[in-house]
Length: 268
Length: 72
Image (cartoon, rainbow over all chains, first blue to last red; front, top):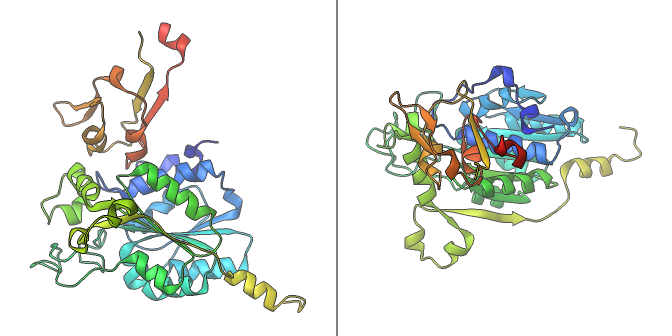
């Protein structure tokens, strides 16, 4: 087996724009899938709408593509009916945090054994460049012609606050770190969230003088700091920066185990 | 001394975004006159695999050339 066995090669090239680093997340994901030798008959990928939501249809797994924002809702259903199956939700930032924000916090609260990978490109790409809850203040979008006026979500803090037992952040520039992080998340039992900073040269870049894919990735390189670097920085220096690394790695009772225990011996 | 790494770009999948070119530590890639990526200096490749891992289109493969192969 190689990573190529985890993609539908006949569907390639990817539909994404030139330089869209959602593809880099896919690249890392299939390599980790190969490294962990994920059993395709025992793994389900759930995805919804958007650029990040469409990419999983190019992966050679059982893939369930659902309504906008509902990836985790359907993933919860799959996991509860088949606790033996590994469930992975691949989502975009708007999908996971805006339209599906409710499902996101409750999946974290329940600590259901699902791996949620959130690609944060800071914009709604497929629908035409509207601002997302992750768009940085000041950045331009079709619905923010004078620059984004609202503050952005910190996905990792939301996940941590809601009770996820594995929370980490990585990015499309530090690819080896990304692979290590995805590997750890996929091996975690409980609700695991990985936020991956990605770039959208078409919808975000063109409106913010960053249309060159390499420049967009350079921006990610510049705005990320490691946990060790962040400890030495003042809050002013950390403004606008993203800390990459693992924030939470704990364990507490997992939802399907709680259900199995509650109904043990009742023939349910 | 023969080159020790073979780089292959799947041109059907590549969208010429230039990420491999911009971030290659050895500057192995260059643009051609039609703004396509070309492997100009494969002998400089150290096999760090960063281009292969970063490629958003999964279009690059770097493999180590075996000793016998490089003598051919």
